[in-house]
Length: 545
Image 1 (cartoon, one colour):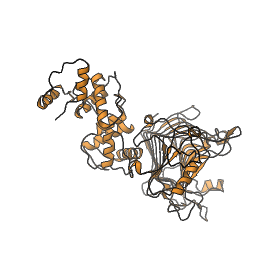
Image 2: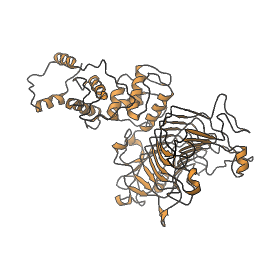
Image 3: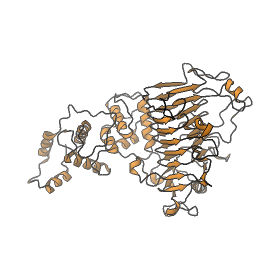
């Protein structure tokens, strides 16, 4: 039985409405049923759900009115107009959910409304109305562009994994109690240890009190550099999740080589005010890491390298799940950006000149909402720029919702840099909903036995020379031509689907979707190389200009 919304009643009184007697519960129920909107022909399934503001008139408003009625917060007609009564109902709903009471219906409120209902366990192969609710909620939360067909297939599982990663949940692609709770709250919840149980280190810019002479263990004692944060953690040796919380501002930062991990736990680099489920509009801005200047230009090198531990007694010395999370930071003016390096300094070539897998890798990391700009030797000369993000022997990573702007080399190295370079045994990575703009080399490149990688729903503007997706390896002919290069094999079962394609870096023509070198979709590479039966190097589809 619906209950009267007392806030609505008091607003009516304040407006001068005559309210002589409160209705009895039976009368209230009858009145509300009589005033219930006619939702029989109202569509609630959309690929995207816009922010609705006062004065908007569109079909999605009628959907919101019906959903708000189902939630017990609206009893007017499904007019499709965001009038004062609808705005009031949105505020009431936001209050009830603990969301900011703005009266604007955005992604959080949409997600909660669309996912409301029973919470069965859902995984690949499931079907039914609950799956449809999850699909439309993910469309609201992530702009996932899912078909709301009620069938839990690979696309839905991928979107669930993306949602879980972005909300700090355990990533398994299964909609269980925690994922349902995050969807239906509209806010997201933290997986693993709750935020209060994480070991925290605090950074602040120099002009806000950041100093490496401080402890870094409280907001009032912030440190200045990521290198100092690593030393603080090594000394404390926590056995929980770690959060490096970074106050907004600009950090002039040299290269960081990171080797501190907590097996079974995550190490997160996040803005100081970030909460699980926040999007970019919920924080005070992205902290900015900019390169050090030497003389008149920027110093050559990387911003950050996730590397294998150097101590043989470290439990991750031979590699494994490093679980490093980067979220909502800006990185600018470096020759190269972020590296996940599961190779250096291990042996990676055998006695016959073949490339070999040097360790178990640095795996299970995530990069979300980052802004990489002005990366490459056009901006920081002196060394070769290879990528804004480079994975080497690094698998099971999620790279989603990031921006890559002005990723550029100069001179005869223009084509050597990429937005994302996935190389040497880097497999099962998910690359979704990123924007690549002005990348002088091919924006995505994959090399040498890097398999089962997925690239979907990305946007490309003025990128590349050969193709949006470039697949390479060095076969016997390549090795003869380049004697110092290791012999390699083809990658296989990579997917490039539903991306928005664009023109080449020069702006003179549409850039082809894909290119392979050496060519051949089933060319494994000869010698010891082979592809599993029925496999090919790349599958593409539904990409549009």
